Length: 174
Image (cartoon, rainbow, N blue to C red; front, side):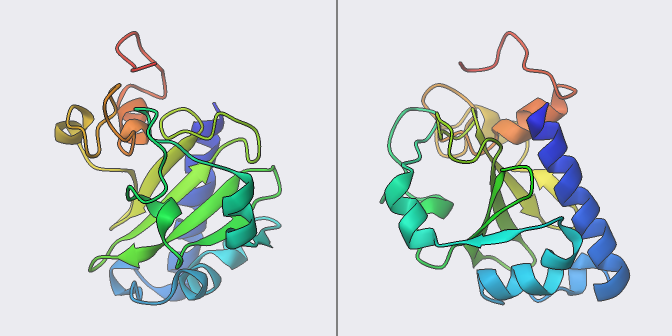
């Protein structure tokens, strides 16, 4: 799947970066999103092209899995500090401008400009926090904040799909 490909690309970039930049536990997570990308990821991602976030934000409207627009409701997409790049295969990678301790959030839109531009469907959250992970754990699948359910944001859907062996099972919240 394109989600598994996105995960593989990110995991490989992080692993290669650790060879040059030491363990991710030593990375400077307080850097701006752009500086974080340029310091730790850019060299390890094939042919990335910077996107104008303000322009892109006007062209694409993202929604949570519940259908609620992301604007003003949290998520990587309502922050002016987000940094966006287009990868060589057309995927968009957003580096969250917010960080907490040793953690940096990433969002991948696996099909770029194409719709539906919705968490859990073509936009998926990952975290760099000791390794590249699908966002959060089982406890987040059912809650509405991070949940991978019809009333949730969809933040944890990458984690759910990963946990289900890269399959979208019958309990997936379409």
